[in-house]
Length: 230
Ligand code: C5P
View 1 (cartoon, rainbow, N blue to C red):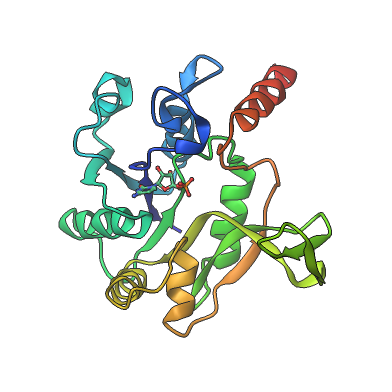
View 2: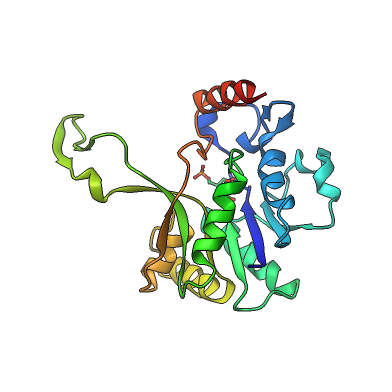
């Protein structure tokens, strides 16, 4: 189906301990953000991209894709959910309608495979709610106390890690995020806002290597992975 992409890219990425937000770090000759955008720009069903950026972001204007007419800017907000909400408002201004599909994808996930994107679109095209790429938990999981000691072992067969893209209808996602934000509930992804609105997003199993670059070792891992593919 035709779709819009929203890329929240207004975070500072403090866990990377770098001199710039992580989406601007280099990976195989390009910034992480350019790789991420290319995952979408290459897709034949893309209608357009809105990227949420910090107001005073000095790095974005230096990228060639800043002049790509398919990419529009929105302002970043205090939390990721605010950044996404601003992007959804921008989509409305661009003529998107309530029923249009929106795929929200982290700026810091540059290794989204085209096959995973196609799988998500195909699996959810006729879904009433929408959903997200996710990965089943691999390791044994422990709940831990503040003393660093195990309280219990959690049944991992029912635990999945939420990845992105997350795919929902523009109108439903807009309402869910806006209501969750005014109610002060924790929304760390789009699906949690939809859940809070009483709906149940569908999980589509994706590749584990669509990881979010969070720590320096994640970047080193992707560098090795991509070098191996050349
Ligand atoms: O910090 P974390 O890795 O969870 O951020 C996920 C994504 O949300 C990143 O792409 C980051 O740039 C974005 N973000 C944002 N606005 C914020 C916080 C995070 O756009 N206020």
